[in-house]
Length: 241
Image 1 (cartoon, helix red, strand yellow):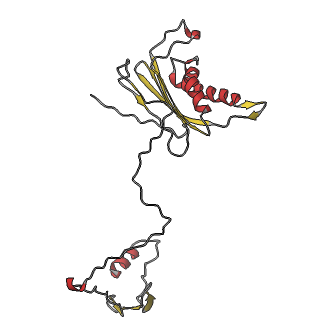
Image 2 (cartoon, helix red, strand yellow):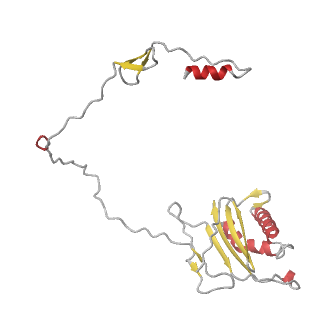
Image 3 (cartoon, helix red, strand yellow):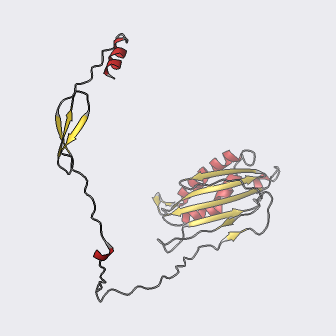
């Protein structure tokens, strides 16, 4: 092995030759054990001396094993174990689900729960199957539009309530809707946030400190557009019946 390395390095111009270090005697310590001497001989073989042999477990016969029953005394103030009780957490709104098809929407369902940390629910859901044409666009062609929104409120429910009642209105009132839904969603989110921040201030002082994440689905005819703000996400899947 050494000869082949030297022959290889000698044929490469401009590179220094490789000279491996010669083996020498050294001593190292084994963690949590006795010292082990490692000796390298002339043939580069490594032998170890003083290596402790692994201990073998003692074999137990069935007659040498005895079992004893012990009892543990509990303090008198420790209550006895009670059977588990079903915890029912009330919902802010009852579960919603479809009963029939509505255009391209085959079915939908929504449910929200306040959880166990708070005694109130900060989440809101918006389901609008048929968005009506706003008065400002009476002379324009109006496609069939549906809007679904999930608003994850935090610090209170005021912001989530505001988005549930108004966000879709900001979107459809944009001049770019319904011809450019992507641009309408971006501008609608921006205008809704700007309007809510103005309502949350009185004489320059912030009186409402709640906020909300959002994920919405806007369906225009047969096209589906999804937008989100914050850590809310949507999962798309295709399922054929």
